Length: 640
Image 1: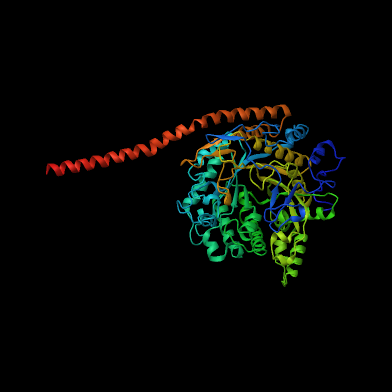
Image 2: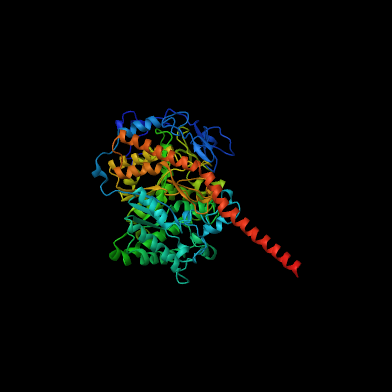
């Protein structure tokens, strides 16, 4: 990168930008603005930006009440009117967002010729059937079965029952009229122990064969992720999981089995989804499975092995399968955007660049350039030396490994949800080794940013365009597919009229279209996610789905939210046709969800009748039989 972070996109505070970008400066903290609006805090107290703690916990200085109005009979009412500063989620910025969107619609369909619109999910989060038909346990099965690891001690044992509802869910995909569906394969479902030579589960193979065939029969392209976090538990117990270099061989065997069994029909393969979370949350903080807290060491080691594994699989496909199957192999990387708090401060600019390099560059740089980002090597190396270590805690690649890894991606999957403001924050090396303190920065948020419920996810559409332009500049404008983008809600009642999600999609897709106009090579977009599902250590407390899932019912029924209708119209128009029509989309979607809400309002009576039918009637019948048997015995005894 030359100059400041974000080259190729507009400045956040420049007053002489063209009209297309001028709105971005509204509400953004620039050189003349303070930092009292948001802060990191130690032990829950806030006193300004200098109070940041090691944990770098993001705190909002505004009302965090749940969006969407109130609940009545378990259903959200008064969901808020677009642009209404009292009840709408996008209160302060909605009019600005709409006016920006109105002036930048892409009307030329040729710009998006061949563009793929889709939705996604993952095996562990949706399938359920955790121990059925020969499936082995994963690290997430083990993790969630331990008390205190997940919100309310919830598990994904049944989740959405996706294992049994493939046809139903494909029908939902047909209703959406998506081009593709991003799904993942459960490694322990097809290789129970993770070791191919020990056992291959044919029932698991059949399940994914049937799923892929059903998608293709309905003209839906399968994009398949090989690893969405569910490592076979046996590999964790025997070898320490991604801390052990032997994972490279075991994963390569698994990948080649998938290429063999499914590759004649699957043309888009993703090796790993969000390896940042696998490494950092699984082996640094322990918030995710396998729950190891190897601070300052574990994440770097896990990531090192994951990068080598990805390269091995790419080369295996390239050598053995590509000529026959004509598919592509990529990786999906997650990154927020980091914007300098003070655009006149070189330290803040450099800190923001470090934020993105430690997040995205950690994995993308080896794949596109052959090695870790220089700034990452320098910072971790210096802190390691200060801590008295002979070598850096960040592993190094040999010359041969750099050459082997570089260029091993036919496309780059980007997962993006939110943005942070970044300032420099120096941490003493003597505080102990930590990925977070290695970066010497603090993350902040603007209290004006909409917050739907997940404490980490703020709606900041302009960060999306900047991140995509960063990828274009940094990595030579690779072929990109957006593999995750979406927003959650966190309210205990049913929210079908999800206006904030429609606004989020409108803002983020519009910024995506701007990035395409900038020349960024994006060829597909995936909403995360099709269904409400198990959200890792958050359990079922957060919901990303376009379809609401009632987890309290055994058959896990699905109900469309307003965003289903809205996204369907975006797909049909291949983007945004004109402001007036997009406004009508919003109105139609709300009308549709209101009707569904009315049906759900009557659902408690239906549920009551189901309970009577399923529980009370059989119980009474059983009691009648028992009483009759007792009376019969009594009469026979009396007769004798």
